[in-house]
Amino acid sequence: MKQFDVPVFYRSPLISAIKRKRKEKDKLKKDFAPTLLDFGPVQIYLARHFGFCYGVENAIEIAFKTIDENPGKRIYLLSEMIHNPQVNKDLLSRGVRFLQDTHGRQIIPFEELTRNDIVLIPAFGTTLEIEKTLNEIGIHTEKYNTTCPFVEKVWNRSEVIARKAYAIIIHGKPTHEETRATFSHAAFNAPSVVVKNMTQTIELAKYITGEKPAADFYEEFKGQYSADFDITKDLDRLGVVNQTTMLASDTQAIADYLKQVMIDKYGLTKENLAERFADTRDTLCYATNDNQTSVSAMLHTPADFAVVVGGYNSSNTSHLVELCEEKLPTYFINNAEKILGRDKILHYNFHTKQELLTRDFLPDHTPVKILMTSGASCPDALVEQVIERIAGFFGATIPTETVAANFLSA
Image (tube, rainbow, N blue to C red):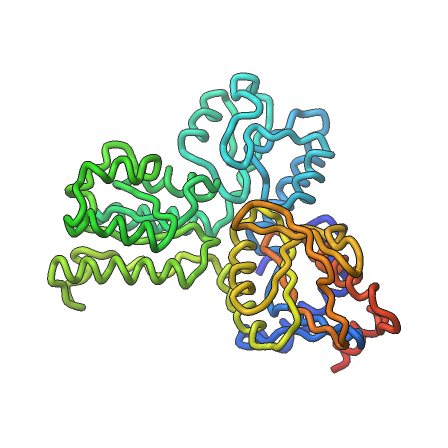
């Protein structure tokens, strides 16, 4: 896989060495067991896969290279490059300005742009409508488009099934940048509707079966269906794709449920299933899949609590938190400074969108066992800082350099 030129301050010598050693010993990625970092009184189990993915590193490389190669030019980001506050802060400090916030609300009007400006398209991609607006101004985004190739894979899959006259069901968060972009591309080719979760999927199915009056659909799914969508006929044939950072198990469950609805309604068999239901397979990106599988494997390890590091508006990170929360106390933080001391931690509840202060989060016994992972947009340097911060609360800990050397020599 391509190696990207990412600023060194996002790297971690400790974690880079660990990842390199794990990769050498497990080239086929069959071992999802966590990595034990034994500091003596505190033991940290790092997930097998975590941190920057291909799409994120690609986006960061393009962004910083664009800044370096265009001194004096006005450079804009359409919205957040990725969902990590440090990366976005670093780009802003270098003079980059955001045109929109993460919800698509305009910060700087497009009318203020000129053909000589540079606009970076974020890793989530963007809508066809925004691309058209920028192109009409004279801004050509191809060179500065950092859209993740795995997001584009979903767009391509949508186009393929649309050509075969299937409607497209998108499993995703309707207001998320990636879902808005995917919806735009899907809706250009076929009738499309977004479902947030299984609950909405079950309600959507009632319109397919006729259990609910068609007229109610347009209010219940307001803002989540394409123009001229006709609920009475547009879901006679369908396929399911997803926002690439959703829980894989949730997307699969939604696809399986809708498949069964179509089988029951039309009396389909395995042989003629394709007449009504498209085989889209899984459109989840490899990194999301690896990170979620790694967390599931890590959770077999007995521990006192879990720490997940990443941006609070990061979809893929919130799903890692969700997995951990099912098993043990979990603290979602975006940097080491959220650990205010041995006796308190400021962490994020993504369900209520609030930061919470928890006291006495570190137990009195030793060794304290901690599970740790991070989202696909989180720099490894932040994870190392969290590790060092926690280890620093314990006396007589083994130095980080020794812990690393012990792991590498094992």
